[in-house]
Amino acid sequence: MPELPEVETVCQALRDTTTGEKIVSVWNSGKTMRWPIPENLGEQISGAVITGIRRRGKYVLMDLEVTERPSLTMLIHLGMSGSVRITALNREEDKRAEGEKPHDHLVLMTRDGTKGKSGHHVVLNDPRRFGGIALCRKGDEIHHPLLKTMGIEPLGNAMNGPFVHEAMAAKKTSIKAALLDQRIIAGIGNIYASEALFRAGISPRRQARNIGPERAGRLAHAIVDVLKDAIADGGTSLRDHVQPGGEIGYFVQRLDVYGRDGETCRRCGGQVRMIRQAGRASFYCPSCQR
Image 1 (cartoon, one colour):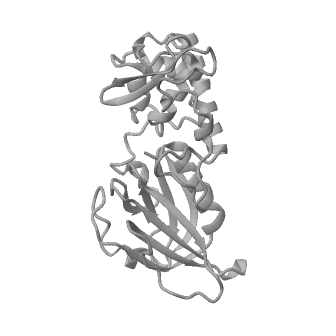
Image 2 (tube, rainbow, N blue to C red):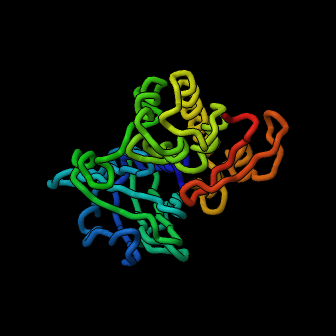
Image 3 (cartoon, one colour):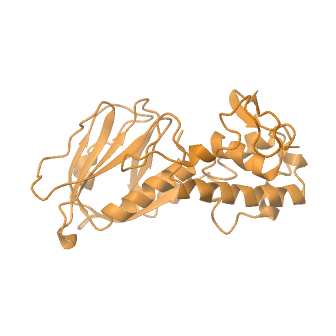
């Protein structure tokens, strides 16, 4: 599943290419994803100018300015297997937006005369259809059911050792399960929880409430570092994730434990192990992580 670094990579690409462009054509597959695509989506966002691209947890937030109507924010979730393609259009191209590959579910065609470019095709592709699209008034997204219970952003100022220590103090789950709880920290999934715990030297089996101040400080630092490193590398490409330009995410080459069951630990020379926790795979080094 695309996690925070993969989603941030998508946001950066959209921000760099489409900010200020106008949506001139909208196509959607009409198929239900995790929830139905909003009715009359094309009517609501055609003609809108893309004024900003943000991220909240694992959601892309696209801000839209619509003439003589309230501004909107479109929420895009990539689900388990979703990806976004961004293709620059030639000046001569003037075709309407339409799906070109299997599992394309949303295509936006944009135009931007101010940059001397024709615009872009922005395509949401999701083979398993666990992603989704939602629309709300700009400013109301913080109250949207999909976002309102989310925890802090791990790359924000609130992420530090005291926060982690306090947030985990009453949790009766494993620290791995707590890191996956989006109500505590938004955006962390299975890959980066495993990698952060390895960097912090904390076993995924350890009870969250047994994370003392010193371990909490190490974990907060490790979470920030691993997420920043993954963003710099364009995320992790395992099966589905590609960057919007089609490139793979190179952080897969720097994974210390995730997906490395039975392989040699790069830190101590021991053996990386995989265990199941609440149906999810956890990878760790028993020698390095306590």
